[in-house]
Structure formats: structure tokens, C-alpha cells
Image (tube, rainbow, N blue to C red; front, side, top):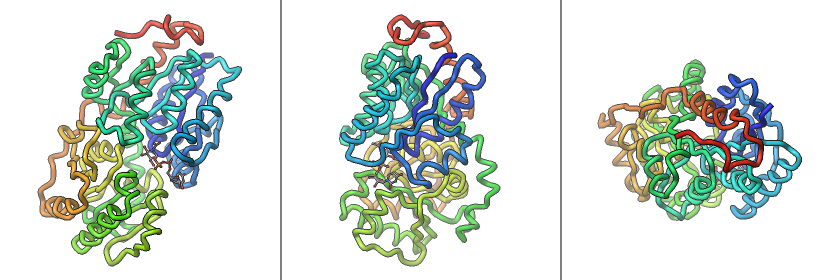
Length: 376
Ligand code: UD1
């Protein structure tokens, strides 16, 4: 059996890995070994996703928990390196751009194990974002770069990555949307929150640039409260944001509901029926594109420009005063025409599994990265 270690760590990883693990079942010679780093550990940030996405129990949970970026990354590296001791792992698969992604790819590459990066090539060109550093480092050291959209190829080629390492496979996050959309709809989630379908806004915010500065966060909350006079707003609050809101002493007024983080199916059910989603998440820009729901992104830049040109996304910049006019325009009918990028079709997991299998089933022994033939 050929062992492929698949790494997940934080909430946005789970819905990307689930379809890949599913598709790897078609390859009986390959034995996936699922590692959870424990970067996210709360019930609602982690476990509920395993249950709802049908992910297998992790073979190993490194339980690293929260810490500063450097210490968290270092702890994951130490624990993951020990885990690989004595194993004959042929390949490590990492997804996305979180600290777990860079930590595990760095450990694997130093052991001479093939590294495959799913969601390679995305660039915000903003090096103050921790995720941008994680993307740059992971892509620079990975052997197999699995790209969701053509702009990813352009970015990697511009950084000197040979074409033979790059594979355009589409977006596995959308596989999960396609697979679970009906189940999410059947839960009638808006009704459970006393919201009328297509008559509410859904908000998620957790980026340091939006929530760490008290004045910026206060401005955002003020804008949300103003918008709530026009349309009900539901805001499931990420743990880091919750702490910041608490220290501001903010209490929501009429029309604005703050809630604990939601599970995958409930959040999908809410996105699907929202008038608009306001976010600073990367993944949600993509999910709303697939669902055809307008997305307003409270950021100065996006590493996912295809969601602007071929999706439903609009970049608002960082000034919270942009929120009310942009949302009001959507409510008044100025909605983008739904489009969805090519290969965001529910089959990316299969394409990824095929690339991975092609690389390991050639019979190359573990530790022989440079001798493994790569596709052209
Ligand atoms: C991480 C990712 C980010 C991703 C986000 C999704 C990095 C650099 N950032 O950011 O790209 O969009 O996850 O959620 O990897 N906490 C809990 N419970 C948990 C996890 C975190 O309470 O299960 C709290 C802790 O107080 C922690 C804070 O949230 O200090 C931040 O968590 P962390 O994993 O460091 O980064 P995120 O902001 O979640």
C-alpha cells in the first residue's frame, strides 16, 4: 500500500479535503492517512465539519491549539515531524493557506517526501496577510501544484515554477457545495432563524485587518447596525472576532443578530438563500460564486480575482462606510449576473486524486522526489 498523508488543520480545510479523500477511494493501492493538526479544535470550528462532511475520523490529531503564528507553526512542525518518524509516507497533501499548510509542507519537503499543494497559485500580493506568506512558501517548496483557476497558473509561472509541476484541476471546495446543497436546503435554515428566504444579509468577518483594530471593528459594527434598519442581518461570529466584540462592549440592536459559529450545512443553507453575503473570507467568495449569491468582500484585495470577473463578488475596500451603499444597491436590484468559473463543477476531487495517483503509482520509493516523473 502507498501511504499518502492528508493534512487538515483549520475550518476552511475540511470542505476541501473531504472530496479528495472520497475520490482517493477509487485507488485501492493508495492508503490515505488523515492528520488533523488541531489548529482549530472547538466543536463548532472543527468536529461538526467532520460529521457533516462525512470526513473519516483523523488517524492522528496533533492537538496543537492556538498560539502566536510562529509558535503555532513551530508546534505543528515538531508534532508532524515526529508523526512521520518511522512511517513510509510517499506523499503529503496540504490544502489552502493556513499555518498548518505551510508547517506540514515544510516538514515533508525536508524529509524528501513529495508535497502536493491543493489551491496553489492564489496571490493577494499583500504580504501583511499571514495567508499570503503561507501561500508563497508552500508553493515555492511543493512538488505538485494543484490550481483552481487559470490565474493561479499565471502567478506560478511568473514566479518561475515549471509548467510540468502545475495542474489545473478546478475547485474542490465547490465539490462539497454540489454534494451537500440539497441536504442544506432541506434543513430550512433561514426559517429556523426567523428569516425570510432572499430577504436577509449574512455576515462573516475574522481577518486581523478588520477585527483587530477596535476603531475599524467599531465602524463595521456601526455600519451593520445601520444596514439592519433596511434588512435583517445574521452574523455568525468567529471566535477571534467574538473576543474583540466583547472587549468593545458592543450590544447589537434591532435587526442585527450575532450568533455562534455555525456548522457546514446550516451555513450553506443560509448562504444559499441570502440576499447577499458580506465577508472577508477567501472561501466564501468562491462558495457564493458557485451558489450565484452576491458577495461583498470587505478587503482591499483578493487572491481570488476570478470571483470578481466570473463570479458574484465585489471588492468593497477596507472602509466600513462602503458597506451600506453597496448592500443597498443590491437590495434595490443591482445584483450581479450569476456565473461560475470553469471546472468548479463538483468533480475537482476526482481530478486531484488522479494527479496524486499518477505521481505515486509510478513505483518511485519514498524519499526520491527528484526522480518522480511529473506530468507535462
Ligand atoms: C485561521 C486561518 C485563516 C482562516 C481561518 C478560518 C491562518 C494563518 N489563518 O485564522 O486563513 O481563514 O482560520 O477560520 O492559519 N479559536 C478558538 N477556537 C478554535 C480556533 C481558534 O477559540 O477552534 C480562537 C483562538 O482564540 C485563536 C483565534 O481564534 O487565538 C484565532 O485562531 P487561529 O487558528 O490562530 O487563526 P484564525 O483567525 O482562525
